[in-house]
Amino acid sequence: MKFFNTGLFLAALFLINPASNLWADEKTSPVSIWKELLEKKSDSVTWVSVTVRIEVSSGGRSFPPSERKLEALGTVIGKDGLIVLSLNQVDPTDSILARMRSPGNVNVNYTEVLILLEDGSEVPANFLLKDEDLDLAFIRPLPTDSNDSIPEEFLAVEYNELEIPNVETLDEVVSLGKLGRNLYRKSTLQRGWVNAVIDKPRDYLVVENVTPGTPVFDRHGKWIGVTAFRKEGGRPSGVITVPAFDVMEIARQVRERTE
Image (cartoon, rainbow, N blue to C red; front, top):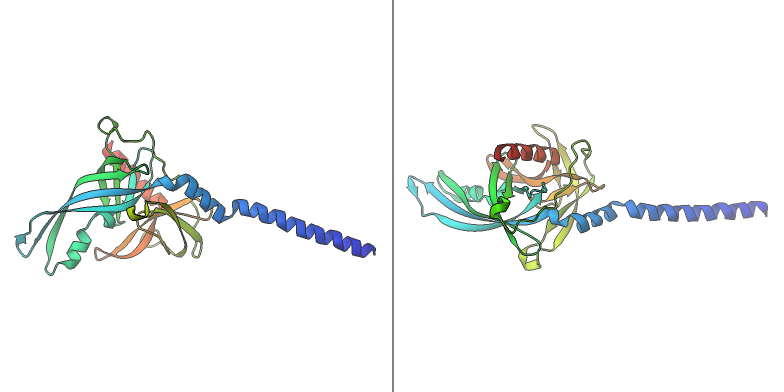
């Protein structure tokens, strides 16, 4: 009888402890962390509108210039509104060259760049830098004295160079994004996983189910990079994630050149 009572006591402990541990795990589970990320950091992703003037020459002749308006998602990486995008999403050069039957030149000039905020306002910005190798573009709001619509401070992804996340193949990740205008630009989370970690000739990740220009986060909610295109022969050949360290290093150089 004594053995039976002890068994019941141990069984009760077994039932109670897993339940309490499960509750604690739910508080710190990746899903809970990602939902909090969506709630608190969704505005670190924004739509950007660009108007480009395109000049094309081929076969010894020049064609009349044309204009095109493009929209792309970008990641806010600084409280000053510095934003990084996938260059391919805002530069039609590659797509035009791919359709040309003979060799030629394509010149793209940015006549208007606008950051589209959550409240519907538009912030004029400057196109600062193109990094064609990494397929990254950097823009920043125009100076405050000529830009009444600029917020005092932008919500940016958090980065700590002393705490670089360790990411491995098959790790689960998420990317923050926003739907298009027809779906009211609603914020989204896309759940994916790391297919490969590339370290030569330079570091980048191959992540499943991501959208170019958006930030990717690990299971702890740490920012690990921005999605862009991998190029081969000057043309997009696949989607990659550029590590946050590389993005911020280029951002530092952008600031040094423009300040």
